[in-house]
Image (cartoon, rainbow, N blue to C red; front, side, top):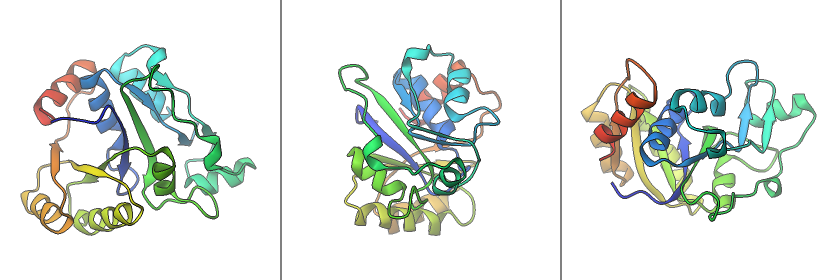
Length: 207
């Protein structure tokens, strides 16, 4: 498919495969990667994990704007760290430096950043088209349609949905019919995750 040069990978929830999909897209497109908000620093951060599985050099990874210690919603993790997340702190990396860029969100589209802004507001602030990642299993229709409704009301361009997990044709059809948006890929579980398998997954699911 024909991807925008720079786009935002959003999710219907946390733990639904945004980072895996971002890694597949990065491997396939040789794009740079930016996670603006990282909540949780005890284990591998998402940036560290993507760097590890792709094996790409450091210069393709844009540093996080906020690195928050606790694995919580950004607004809560920021409060524990004694900071407040401000949209004005985020600066989209220069297109001359990163002509192809994948920006990954944290949690779902309505997860709070502070008392007045949520993740969808950050997408709007950065003014990027959105690729929405959803799980394939039971419950995804509701989560995905609500997320699409929020993104549409926010005036964001959503160019597709990626379903992550075992294929589910009924859920795929429902999202496309009721959401009015194409499911551009159905990413099935990968037995091994490394640059080779990610690149092969890109060729299998996104071409």
